[in-house]
Length: 48
Image (tube, rainbow, N blue to C red; front, side, top):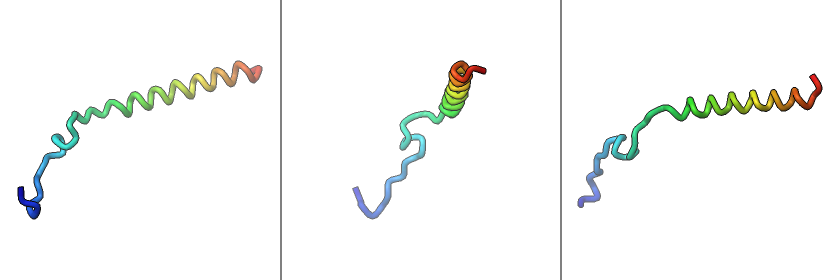
């Protein structure tokens, strides 16, 4: 192997997985549910 020549590798091979983009939906839904749960808990203890 020659050190002077860089080895080319594609982004998909370097990542070793698929880029699905599903995680943003999971995070946004869970954040929305946490905000709603916090609002429900707050309203139940605040007496409104």
